[in-house]
Image (cartoon, rainbow, N blue to C red; front, side, top):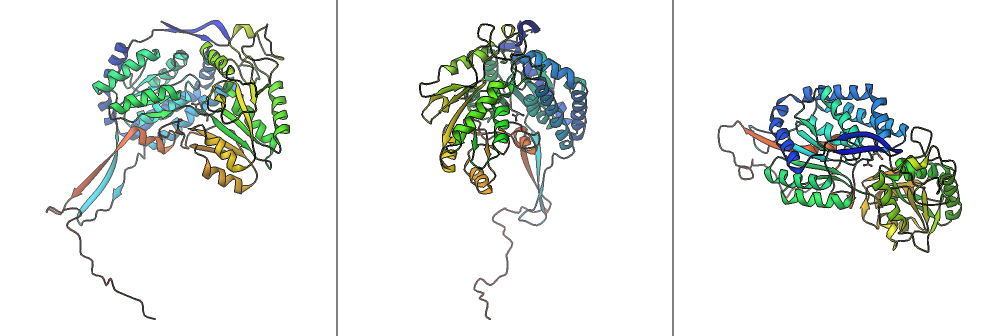
Length: 498
Ligand code: UN1
């Protein structure tokens, strides 16, 4: 059995669920695979109506689901409501796609012949997701995968089984058959073993994974062995560049939300705040004051952030604190590490000893050679550095090899366009924080952040469908492409005489 607890009060058990073994996951994969063909036979608009039902049910259960999210993984309740809204938005977008899912009619180079394309479902999809967005990010996979006619086996984070079971129940209540969306709770080792057997047996036809670059690399490699490309959404070290002409208060609002919202546990969280050298001292001082005065604690109250998702995430944060070097300045709190009665934070909301809370940390004076420059910290830790030219800022923003999201604060359009062109990230924000994706714009990264796959909007359909092309020759004779060319009468030596 696996037990999830409330990270704000680790004595409170949220759910106790059976943990699946690799063999059990494989059985589930086979069941979903067997059912998929029947699901694909349903007209896409009918599948769209089912997605519409799911969206309405998520909407009518919004508060209950958001409460469960905050209780099980600790994000602030207003953010949990936003996350559930993202599921609703995703359903609202894809219910319409059920009436499109367009193919094309394409002209042929021959007469009496027509060409067409069709989107075909891939088969059974294995989705593995993280605990930081326990409903929104899974919905980015599950909704378009189902709409496109695939079956889905979902392995959510073992830290959020109650949320996963609740979301699954809503899908089933909306009309998704029980063998078309199947949820399994398992640890990483059993999941990876099942992934390998499922790929080998042909009962996994597509893999989707959101999580660390380290694990994504292994999953992508395994899928590659079986001639598949996984949909990978991996880590980030997302830069935010502040130019001297920027609206500084706006930039710092963005930095605070991006850096410390969800306790820094978003793949789109702010990694390094890059401040122009001419304003470095004053902007850093303002940022430090904002972080020092921010409320931390009970996620059901008005705080910047609540607990870490679990002890494991707190332990990772403590490991990252060890990367601080002597030339760095540690700012933002009077202490670092776990917040407790013995290691208190001013104005803490609630009882810190009950949960896994961490002090927010700013590590200033970051340079390109530091370990923290290129390490995704996934916790309430923001690094800050300075630059002198925009070219240098772009170089620093790209230099670690991650490329998920990025931001620049400036009022000069020249800076905007030069940054957009130079940044290697898949997503660029102008005068906005590094997080806050919308459900109908492509989401995804490059380099260490992903293999080029994109989620959300129409773009994700390419992850869950394959193009089938059809040609139909109704000439009643064998017309040979590239050989039976239609002759064109023309004068290649024509020169205009005026
Ligand atoms: C993630 O952390 O895996 O734009 C995704 C955002 C969120 C999604 C983040 N809507 O930050």
